[in-house]
Every structure is written in structure tokens, then in C-alpha cells.
Image (cartoon, rainbow, N blue to C red; front, side, top):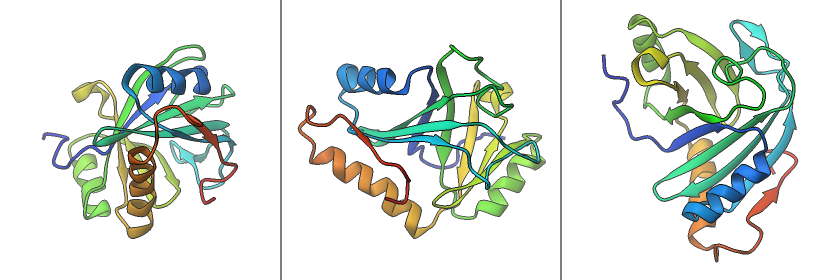
Length: 177
């Protein structure tokens, strides 16, 4: 089974310092501006079937046709992020796709032997599939819906109107802001 049937709108990286990493992306490839949402502990985040106590910060910045997600975990709680990277380590963690039928795609991965490690709810339902044996990173399945597409499109529109310099990191306290 090939894990790629759909376009990849997001590349996710675990980082040790989210603001430093965002500035590397800004300076190196002109990604951004980054929308930074700090210090989440979500009641809708599950790791291997149990509530996750991972304290996470996220930053999202557009880079060409895809956006870059940066994730910093502030504690040592078990998580899909710590499955790949210990504190202080950084690197590509996942690619994300938006299949038209989330349930069917989730089952297709499970039937092919790729377990669901994490589920959460943000703008849509999300499942991280452990595809590391096949492609070296996780696949994040987003449930495709209008709210999620509006969020992704807002980052693209923000990037297209950005001068590449002004406010490269923009902090929001809630991703719904």
C-alpha cells in the first residue's frame, strides 16, 4: 500500500525552541508569517487510547504550496512527538493529508498495519498513523471539512499578502482566535 493518495498540505516538525525554529524557516525559505499558539493541554488529545497530558505549543506558517507546522513539547509526558524525538531533538515528524472520507482512510491505514497512535480534535478530527516503517515519519489524517479548509486557506492568504519581514511570529492564545 502506498501511503500517498492525496496532496500533502502540511509538513510537521518537532522542534526544541519554536520561535527559533520559526525564524530559521522565515530566514531560510521565506515561510511565514507563523501563527504561534503556545502551551496547550487539550482534553480532546489521546495518546495510545489514553488522555494525553503533553503540553504543546504550535506554530503554522505557509511555505509555497504547503504549510509548515512546528511543534514544541514542554514536558516529558508520553506522546506521538516523544515517540520520535526526545527533549532537545528536532526533525521531520509527520506529513498531513485531508482525505475525502476520513473514516475510510483511517481504516485503510489500519488494514495495512499502520496503527493509530494519537487522536485529537482541533478544526476537525485528527488521527496520527504510525507509518515510520514505510516513510520514516507519521501520517496525520485530518478530517476534511469547511472550517479546516478555511483555516489552511487563511494561512496561505496571510502568506501571500506578507512582506516577509513584518511580524514574522504572531502569537494567538487560542487557535480559534
